[in-house]
Image 1: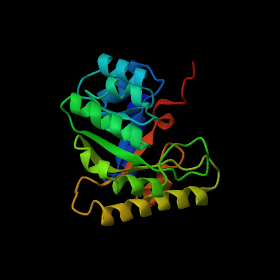
Image 2: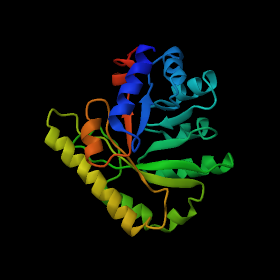
Image 3: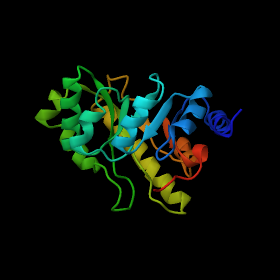
Image 4: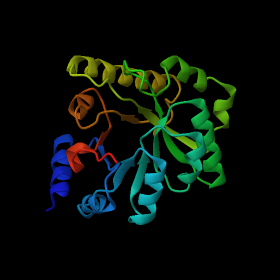
Amino acid sequence: MSEIAGKIEFIKKKIGNGVKLVAVSKTKPPEDILEAYKSGHRIFGENKVQELVYKHETLPQDIEWHMIGHLQTNKVKYIASFISLVHSVDSLKVLRAVNNEAKKNNRIISCLFQVKIAQEDTKYGFSFGELIDVLESEEFSTFTNVKFAGLMGMATFTDSDEQIREEFRLLKNYFQELKNSYFSNIDYFSEISMGMSDDYEIAIEEGSTMIRVGSNIFGERIYL
């Protein structure tokens, strides 16, 4: 078993069957992703459209690609034909673009609303109030080519486990409130994407259904 395959197996055993693992392969070469693929893993996340398109074209076609990074509206068209899940719908503008490009490709694209829970200006996302405004807008009913699957959030980059825990708990509370008020009859509104390499265990304890892990699988990111 390769080192990468061993790390994936270790994490999957740790998290159990109730949590999905997104192997975050950003900046990593296709060869590393193939190692993970050969272990049976199929869900991979990228944060840049250009890299995502290249890897989709280069690697096996049964890979389930997730867009986890900030998505510019003018780049949605490059991934709309194949993307499995967009974690980072962080504005009405992005939502509109995803719906329009999905329609052009005769697809329904699954999306997560990215909610800002971190105490950092560098993080993207809706405030909870902004998200409610979108859900109650007249335009919302026109997004027929988007499947709303849940929420995504990133905790503050901090050494304080308690702060991280509180932020994850906040996202779970937001999810529950939206589920009860807007998506009670929608079975597939079920995902809470939170937790990365350093904090996924806390995230799972607070209700995460999907974790995004990169460095704990592939090693530290390569910056060019």
